Length: 88
Image 1 (cartoon, one colour):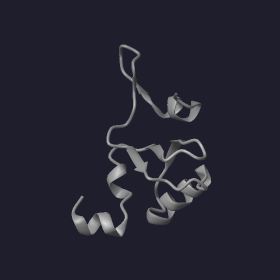
Image 2: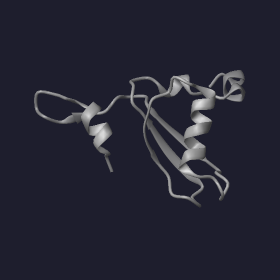
Image 3: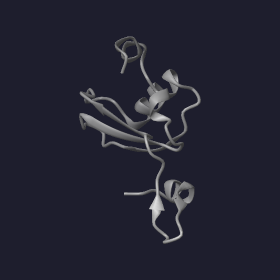
């Protein structure tokens, strides 16, 4: 489901198809049951203060979340130090 924020930021091509920024989606797994959407947002911003979060697809109690960032190629800038050491 697209939020108004994402729709407004999406660029329309000549044929009026919505084009979302590429390489701007993060997937998180193995989330503890007491984590909230705000906890996820805070954790992302703690790792990358400049991250511009368009939306977070997450229901409390779920073990997975999908985060869409607003800018093209921005997912690579949100990495934990552990991921950076592994070369991901």
